[in-house]
Structure formats: structure tokens, C-alpha cells
Image 1 (cartoon, rainbow, N blue to C red):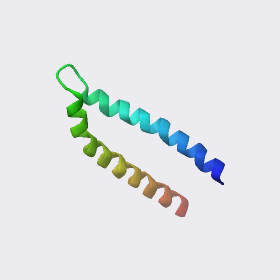
Image 2 (cartoon, rainbow, N blue to C red):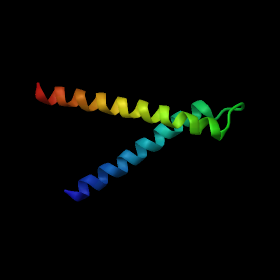
Image 3 (tube, rainbow, N blue to C red):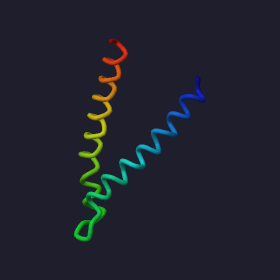
Image 4 (cartoon, rainbow, N blue to C red):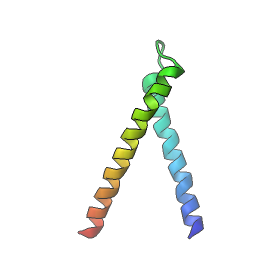
Length: 65
């Protein structure tokens, strides 16, 4: 149902915010700038997409067993 999807979307946003904090914390140090974070963005996106894909594959294997 739509309400379940919206609830899941809110949880995803919370997790996405935590991921953004994690990656920003790596880059935004004394000697770095927001430009460095912009350059990290495509790499961070690739990492998150790969990890999500692998997590979904694990769930599919778990449910198929």
C-alpha cells in the first residue's frame, strides 16, 4: 500500500542523511572544501548503489533458501 511505501521512503531519507553525514565527515576537514565534497559525490553514489545492490541480492538469497 501507498502508506507503507511512504513510511519506507521516510526511513530511506533518514538513512540517506546518515550516509551524507558519513561522507561529508570524511571530506569536510580543516584542509578541505565543499568543492572536495562535490568531487566525492559521484564516488559516494557509486559506493551506496553497489552496497544496496549487494544487500538486495543477499536478501533475495535469504528468502529463496
